[in-house]
Picture 1 (cartoon, helix red, strand yellow):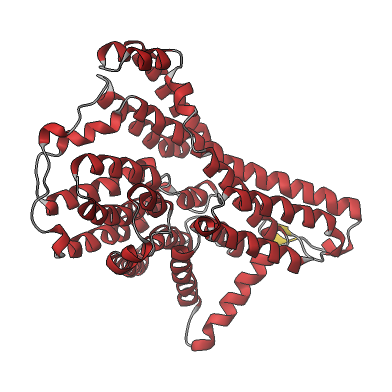
Picture 2 (cartoon, one colour; picture 1 turned 90 degrees about the vertical axis):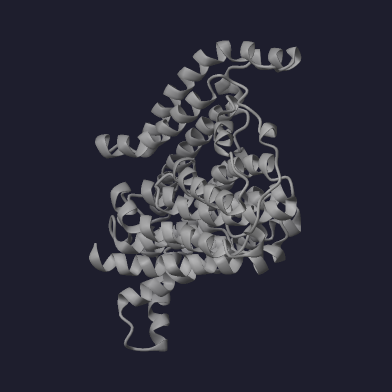
Length: 464
């Protein structure tokens, strides 16, 4: 029965990876995989001899000798435990997404356009790289990529120039998301799972992440694509459509930054702080919305349409629910493998198998090799299930360097292929970037950034 469950998982995983070829939204195989895996677990519970207790991160003693009803009860308890942990992540993401949509409702991100008063391609590259790095640490790498490419489309008219900037934005956004607990879904998973803390995450990963952004951007300045000036008319850059744009931008970003502080002070799960932040932002949004449309040049039909909806309702209607359901499916499917002890046993096999290349390798080197392979793997397949699997594979405690290296590797490794990260996929869709163009022109920059950052992490780990 375990073999059947693994086959179902692998087939679902392949369907997710081949999403664009199959023309099938990845949430569908994720949800099917979750339901079928847990159904097989329930139906074949008497055939299993081991069961993994996630709360204690250890195998349950004498599971094979338990009665059928006791086994089913343990399955239900485990399912509820994993659903609770998954819900923490999903509610957190829903809150963050809603705040970002509220900022966008007030056209807050257009405030950034006002800072572009030069035409140098090199300056523009550094501006977008730094903005992507900073914004992704606050509003997550996916949203930062969407925002910056939307702004880029207003400034750089030639697509052949724009896709180069988009490629470096992907690298910078993924790098910025790695050192922040709210910058990438995988880092958020580790943070909510009490594997990393905000302070140590910054200590371990800020410099590696910064180098992962700076080195590729610096190398890119020597490429012909970033020489000379861009052609654009400063007067074409649109002004914010609301008098509260800047205010809502800073309020929204500040409220998201408040969440790690709230967790540190209260020791409550992060989603509680995110709900508080959402409530504060929503309150100001409702107040500001009363005067928003009288100050704009929208036509009356648009004004009437927006007047009938509050900013919160309008923002909630734009939430990317397919992504939320995908995370639900993939995290719960991985939980099924974890509960059977498959991931735990696989980790042991992996650790024992790698030293075959040399008996002098110690445990740290083996772990580093596993994590680097995870980073390379995240460029090919989705990093969310890889990190979810690592949570079940390793038993190290809070702020063990291994978890921080996993956060960096999974977060930045995806930049090596355009399909390797959510930021890359959305940029691919927005700019119609060709997979092989990215592989030839950008992947080598991402690889260098990843290797330099990994080396920097190893050095920093020696002194922390």
